Image (tube, rainbow, N blue to C red):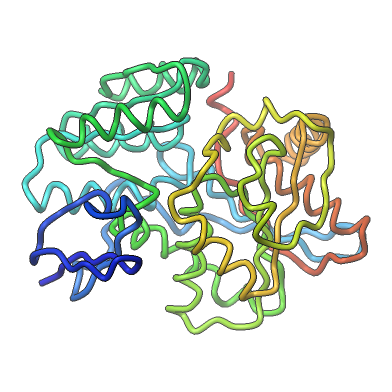
Amino acid sequence: MWRFYCPSCGVEYPEEKYLPFCEKCGGGLEVKGELPGRKKILGEGDTPTVTDRYRGFEVNFKLEYLNPSGSFKDRGCSYALYMAKEIGYKASVVDSSGNTGLSTALYSSRLGMESYVVVPKYASESKKSLIKKVGGNLIETETREGAYERAVELSSKYYYVAHQTNPFFLYGMMSIGVELSDLAEGRDIIIPVSSGSLLLGLYRGLLEADSKNFRIIGVQAVERAALKDYVKVFGVVGGETSKYADALLVKNPRRLGEIASVLNEVGGGVVLVGDEAILNASEELHRMGFIVEPSSSVVWAAFKFLIEKDVARDSILVLTGSGLKYI
C-alpha cells in the first residue's frame, strides 16, 4: 500500500489515490509505503557507458539516447505509465517540449492506453511527427508555459504524467543513479537540467545505492537559467542566446528548491551554455560517434569549459537525447 503526501504542506492523501501534484500548493508530491518494483516494458535503462580520455581527464559518456524513444525520459515514463495502468487509467496526458511527449505516447501505446501530448508549436517537427506515428494525439500551444496549462486542464479527465511533480516518474528515474553508483565516486556527473527530473532521480538513485563523494554539475540554456540565483554559477560559455537548446525550455521548475538544495549539498553548481558552444559541441560529439540532439551536447560544452577554468575532474557526461530525431 502507498499514499502520496506533500513535503511542503504536510498534507497526506488517501491510500492509493493518484494526484499529479499537491491540491493545496501545486508542488511536487512524495510517496509513503511500498511501491511495485521498477519494470522494464521496452528494455529501457541499462544504457552503455563509453570511457575516453580528454586533456588528461577520464570522461565517461552515459548513452541515454539509446533508450527506446531516444531519451532518458523513458525511465520515468515507463514506470509512471505502468502505475497508471495498474490504477486503472485508460488515457494519459503530458506537456512537453518533445522528448517526454514522445516517450509518453510510446509507452501509452505499448500499454494499450490513449495519449494526449501538449507541445509548444515551435517544438521539433520531427519529434511532433514521431509522437503521432507512435499513436499520440498531438495538441499544440503557443508557448511551453501554455502547454503546461493545457495539460493541467486535461488532467481532470486523463492520467497526467506530470514529470515535474509525479513521484512515480522520479521513482523510475532513480534507476540511472543506481546504474552509475559504482562509477560516481570521486567524479563529476554533468547533466542537462530543465524540469530537473533527471537530476533528482539520479541523486536519489545514488543515495539508494549508498554512493558518496560525487559532484553534480547542472547545465542550463543561458536563456532558461532558473538555477542561476540559487547555486554556484561556474560561468557562461557560448553567447547569450540558446535557441538550439530546444529540449531545455522549462522556465520555472516545480521542484526548483529541491534541485538547488541537491546541487549545493554535493558542492556542485551550474554552467550556462549558449548557441555558439552548443553548435560546436554538437559537431564535435557527432564526429566522436555520439549522435545526440543539441540539448544533450551542452554537457560536452560545459565539461570543456570546466577544464579551461581549471575546476574539472574526471567526469560522467549524461547524453540525454538522440540526434536522429532532428534528421
